[in-house]
Image (cartoon, rainbow, N blue to C red):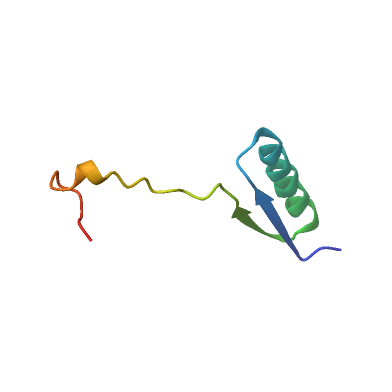
Amino acid sequence: MYKHILIATDGSEIGSKAISHAIELAKVIGAKLSAVTVTEPYEAVVVPEARGLGAVDS
């Protein structure tokens, strides 16, 4: 059947349920399991007033 299962998750409740299901399926059929996480990109906030307060100046 399946030799390798790839599961993607975003950390949501339904994503956690999908991971649990994938783990059980992989155990039953003897497949490998790989996971990838998906998250929102992190946006850095640059505050000009922070210069000289230990912030890294560029």
